[in-house]
Amino acid sequence: MSFFDPEFLVFYLICLVLYYKVRDKDQKFVIFAASSLFIGFISVPFLLYTYLFILVNYIFGLQIKNFSKNPKAQKIICNSGILLNIGSLFVFKYLNFVLSSVSQLFNLFNYSLPISAVNIIVPVGISYYTLQGISYLLQVYRGHEPAEKNIIVFANFILFFPKFLSGPIELSKTFIPQLKKSFAFDYPLLREGFKLILWGAFKKIVIADRLAIIINGVYSDLHSFSGIPLWITFVLQPLHLYCDFSGYTDIAIGIGKTFGLNLTNNFKRPFFSTSVTMFWQRMHISLTFWCNEYIFKRLSFKLRKWGYWAPVFSVLITFLILGLWHGPRWTFIIVGLLQGIAINYEYFTKKYRFAIGKKFPPRLVLYSSYLLTYLFYCFTMTFYNSLKLGDVRYFISNMFTNIDFFNFNMSIISRSDKIIAFFSLLLVFIVEFRQENGKDVFQEIGFWPAWIRKVCYYSLCILIIYFGSSMNEFVYMKF
Image (cartoon, rainbow, N blue to C red; front, side, top):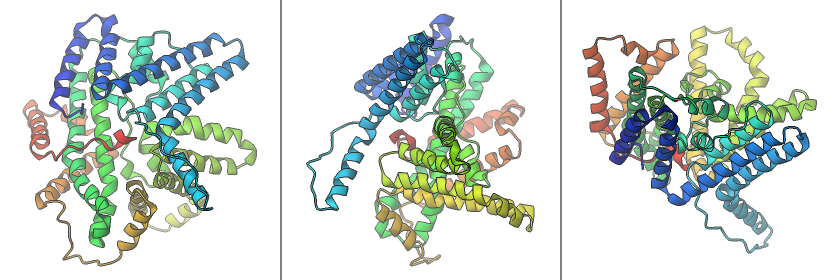
């Protein structure tokens, strides 16, 4: 069931009405039932697996707390729970990749292994809630928060349907306390939530799904393109991913707000970043924060005897894992390594780059930094969108062949779609530019006369209904 299916709209509104009609103490049961129905509608086996995941992590959390006076046993329990989480994720998502890689390695030495792929369907949302389970166990083990005794509250932490498919990856210390509260109907909060839902839907189905026509069209028949079409794809692919994923996040946060719950904002205008380091502080924030908190910091501490090489190595490993998190593909691994290498480069050259930058006008340095950071991300996106390294090689090498600005084939998207995409992206840029300069556009709209606000809202609805492209699934659902 997609966020844009008519059935989902009916389902969501019924859940919302029930949520505010039941007694305060029963609101958590409405969330549990709604989330279970949402996931069960997608797949009953996936729902049952998620129930098992919840039960196992719930029990491990309680046992860690019960053995608080026995640190050795507590550590064993915590490590066992973490290994079980990682093991299940490995089996479902990475086992076939490892088996295939081992088989290919032996084939290089003319030795054939009797290994075949295992027929496994990856449960939806597993990459997101597995990280939530691991962080919860670590938080309880470190004594940073108590083990949750109410299994319905804990289940809602994992299941809450707006974030289940593509995050944000919530931390138990910030989300579970919210799930224990009751919420009275709050019209201003409801209105704020609906604004975000509308804005997210606009970015997804008016912009991202329209840009997907270009991105998917080129990559599905890559060897038919060269020159300008590849340059256009090169420049647009980050915007496609951003509008798709941030669109989902806005919708999820908006739905959460209508239930009185605050989800983590996954994006903070990443394309206004002046460095790769800053970019990853603004892009997919919940994932990068998780990796920083539970991989980078831990690894840097363990390797502290290495001196300044400790953070260098830790950054590479962290981004290697971050790339691998996206899926069992060598191109994803290379994306992670490239980002790690770039951040280490910035770390070692910061002093020299700043010294050179002082010799040029500040605005020139600022806009050049925006551009270089964006172009580097464009480059890494060619690995992200390519299934094979050979596709990357073809893409990059053929960007510089058959360049003809006045006669190139881009018939995969109509002229009207190009115009709609351009002006829609311009609107997003204006909104984010103002936000980057300290202006909250959505808050400002609240001070406008009522008739102007209504015109804005209805116009956005009309754009979504009449100019929404064919709806594809959200990009990050496949992770």
